[in-house]
Length: 432
Image (cartoon, rainbow, N blue to C red; front, side, top):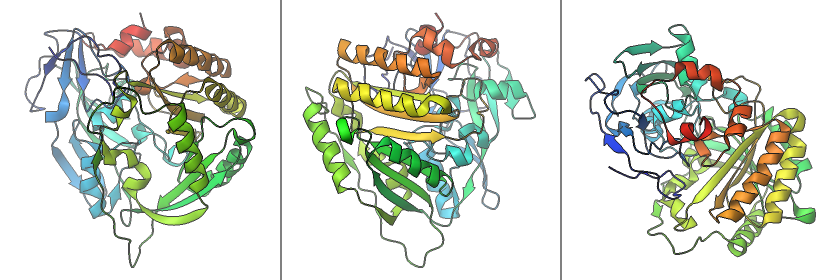
């Protein structure tokens, strides 16, 4: 039995037995010891990837290429392939992931199960929009081909379905064309949330990738200040700047969190003042995945781990709700260096339980300070609930069941597609 914590390194869940299939075509006994749950690279922050007392199906052995057409950009691969692997294969051949989250270390199966989104949702939607088809292995032994035309209801249930409809064995997706591995990035500061909304409206009309960092501890006249970063893939260049990823590591877990009121205020103040309006060429790793260059960065939060709180609030209430969330966070003295604000587009998600929807999404990491952190989250929940918003299961470790039900009205319909042998700590918590 093994204890595999989520990326937040919160107190370890109950032990689970691990099953490691090596061949997707070989019989895989998924009904022998329920509950079962697929496990990729463990980059979900909370308990959506945990299965205490059950079986975790480690998909790291299902990491083979099946087919790639360099002319059309259609890629078929096993579900354990990492997004990092796809980029290493595809970018030199003129193709890029159509949607990428903030880390390359997630698997294709995990990206589908959480219907991950990126900085280009307003332009390209979420990961599920670029899936052509996939195979779903049920605990009965049935292998289902799912696509918009074949078993479309299962296709919709599995995209964003948190790994609960069965085991994804392979998937086929459409990549996006690029000229090189660099991004043209436009950076500018904003001094208030009002200025952010103005910049955001203008940039979303012109740039396919948009995101902002917000100073979550600033108060008074400085509250809501931040740095906006819009980007597009660079056009053909005669010369590209030299680039090499510098890999570093957090070698150990400090006895206390390195993220505290003093370090947070100092870092945020320095980062905001050093940022300037500029246009520059950045390698795609520097723009999309900067934290991937620091192995075990999650250790900086100390032995008690950390939570990520990510919400989405709809357009009619998003400006007031985001302002109130930032006020309550600043007042609490808690927060992180990683406060991200962006807006989703209008494109409806394909998955029954998909998180992306029209509105603004705010995401922050919080060191685990016990009851103080729990009370803050209850305070933030009240704002999100009143605004008609939702929390992101892939980042969650404590969402109340009532809040999940309110944020995911198709949950009852989704239950008709659950595999009877599958389950997770998250699902048992929110559907008890």
